[in-house]
Image (cartoon, rainbow over all chains, first blue to last red; front, side, top):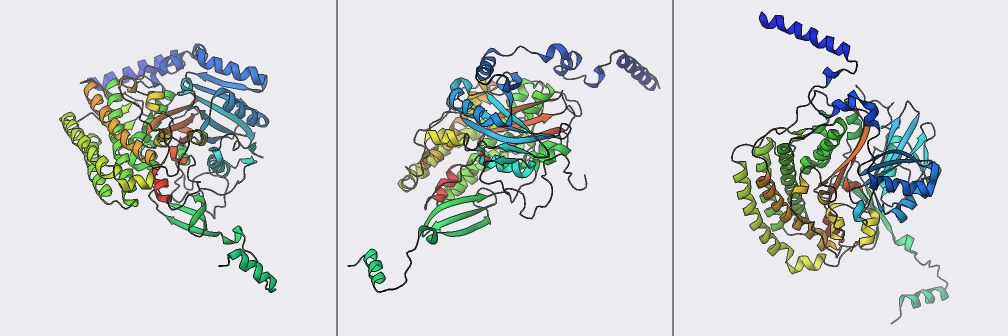
Length: 204
Length: 373
């Protein structure tokens, strides 16, 4: 009986607390790290950008100016977004002048709310030792209704298959790619590209 | 003796309507497969000129399971067992980078003992993977001893992993926050004993296989992938290390406790088939040293995993984390919209980078398999 009596009290106490603090602290009691992030987002939003990565971004910005949109600069990770028409030029610059000599992967994400598809290339470096741990994400966005992007196949040879996969999984047509055609899906596939969000798995 | 050319001229004089065969006419297009050439189900479209293969176009996807789509329907913990499937022999490593990515997104701190144990599981799994590759490579070259021995010795590591994780092949052992369970009693002694035995065996492997003149003849100087080409194509793992690029994620971007481990990045400069098959062997030796060090330096007690919320999630964001798997750099790109289910999860498998579009003669098998599946 006593235990039963205690529990509602505790519940009431915790619910009171949660009404006092709007950012729901009782929801994540255990891990220490996300707490400050959830509690105080404004100071966390601009963490001190690491100087080396910042230098890399400055170098890119110096060359291309305002057409480059820097999404984030984190330790070892940089993400930039470019206009589709600039992507080949930027990629060539990154390869020849910055040392990002190979593409680890390429793929895409569908953002139906913004009616856009983001295609992302993860670039890394084998030749520059100080860039060995870094990944530069080069992205470009295109409209969902007429998804077209220039291919990077002439800059990074290895994205040939990744782009073919992105073509059939997300329906992004890569201009200049010699084979925008069926790759992994069954030959008789007759549906919308399956990685788009409006494709639902049957029964789910 | 009249040459073919003379005969052709002669027949023209006689007024015979003989048309010279062009190269295009000689080529025959064949569909090879779908079959299982030691690397998953595949169909090759090859063009042959007599006995020579002059063009080869792979057609994968027969076992495409749509993992990325499946990820969108499940929360992060539910995703672990099915994400092992793409590389079933290396399941600890493929869930390793996934765990690292989720930890970064959700801000989870892993206890040190947990970090050591999952590094240990991944190293043991790397041995399993490399031995499996070596067995297949051996039998494809017609060396059946090299099929029997690695297959037998692979059992050592599978047994160790069975004791450690409870499963033989797909462990689902590395999870965001650490590992599922602690090391059982007596594991360290057993592991060290088997590692001593295995290092002795590796010497025998070298004697019977790598030092065999026949094997050397078939692989040395064959299908050289130059350093420039390897970089341009972005090949990964032992293939790029065999071409003279000493690149290993464990050194380049040390995750968990790998910066406390003393090991060398093994690489060779020749870039031929022999180098591609010998670098994994050197990696196995190095991996033995790593396992010994991990067992030595591991904290004797402590938590093995962080306590998690039922559905770990973090603020919206994205991350790309890599580990060095048996095949090379293995990355996970995960986009989170703040819900427990990933909005998009993309596996960057090293084997998905193109390396099969090569012109090859009779060395196709030696060449294809040397790159590790």
